[in-house]
Length: 212
Image 1: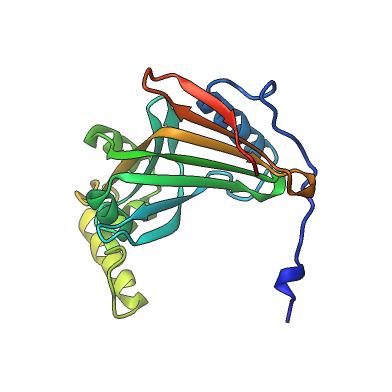
Image 2: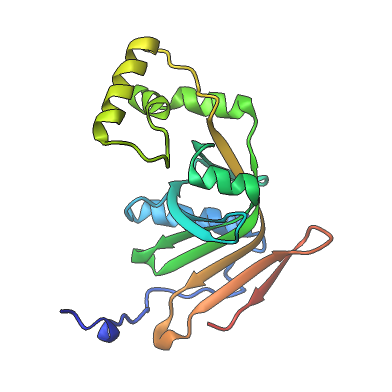
């Protein structure tokens, strides 16, 4: 049995200073995401999404970022899934990117809204055919009798829609509009760099250093 308490790593790859970071958190995110992609880290677009239901019970799962701009961070999913139901009850959520190889974490918090039907339609049409059929075949987060249910559903909807499945009414995009960003860079002796950006009342970003 591995002694988990003895597992340690010294973080020594890079640093994050106020002088070297961008004043705009979206630009800083774009820089780090680009570096993660260039470094060929596994799934640099994967992010953990944390939501809280009406009873204040939290849950997390990994989703894939599909876009970002000044409006926020976008992903697509089943509206009837657990995360969809929780966002309907409580539209505040958090995202986290963890680029292990670069010893970096980005945390983002804010309110979540659905994207427009036109935006969801456009992205859905760009997906591979099997993914579009899969959106119809999977009653996401519901209990099913076995994998055969998914296979049978995929065959049924594949036969029904052939090469042109429309976007299901229960499937589409969400956009988190950040009011808080945090950039974490691992450092030696656990004296990590943490820069937080918070949105002030005048819609300007305030950058401040947090103790690790």
